[in-house]
Length: 259
Ligand code: ADP
Ligand code: MG
Image (cartoon, rainbow, N blue to C red; front, side):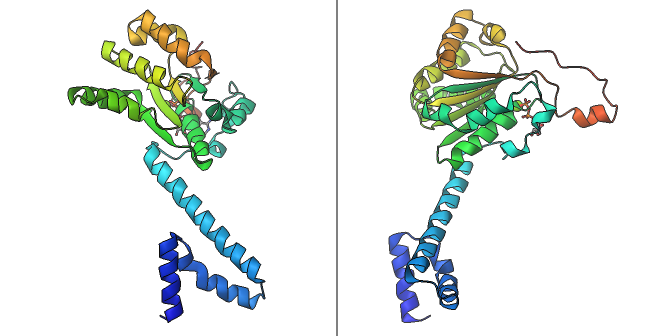
């Protein structure tokens, strides 16, 4: 390695330039071949470095978010689910709701794409450099129960207020005891007007009292959640069963509507 190359690598390292060590020689050769101006060459180098930093940041944020999969909006077939107004989802994908610290609640029976849409909006948020954390209600409860046993419940709840977008998936599959309901109330109160949440549930709001086994807590939670929020009510049939229906394995029925 030439002395100059060594010096350049040292400088890249000191300046925290992560991508240039791999690409500066190729860019320099190309610039010479194409007779690029010094400024064009400099711009190319800096843009490549910026892109690499952005990509690395997105990868890190996706890891931290703990998505169950990496579904995107362009993989969602809106024609299969006519009860969803595509324009409303596109509006949500503009992420104004995160800037305004509003919530999104996706309601509907199993398999209609609630988790898919929640993750896809989470991915959009990460692409726009917001921090995101995904957790199911069941995992949340497990984690908060452990935290209570280890005497650090408050710190755990505080951690969940940090991400700009918190996705809480599958509210309503399990009934919550008083501890669960109180935890959710605390979390929703802590994030109220401070940070956005996307929630998904297979139960209509009218049923939330029975999830929490307490109408007073349910309405206190809903009151804060819904104050600044968008509800997407999905009324179609399960996408998971689509192919089975086509193959005639299941009878053609419509999933019960959610109000
Ligand atoms: P839910 O959370 O409502 O139970 P999911 O989002 O988990 O449903 O969807 C079930 C599966 O079907 C996932 O693999 C999801 O990607 C896929 N899916 C659901 N709806 C659609 C759709 N309209 N277009 C494409 N894939 C879909
Ligand atoms: Mg789901």
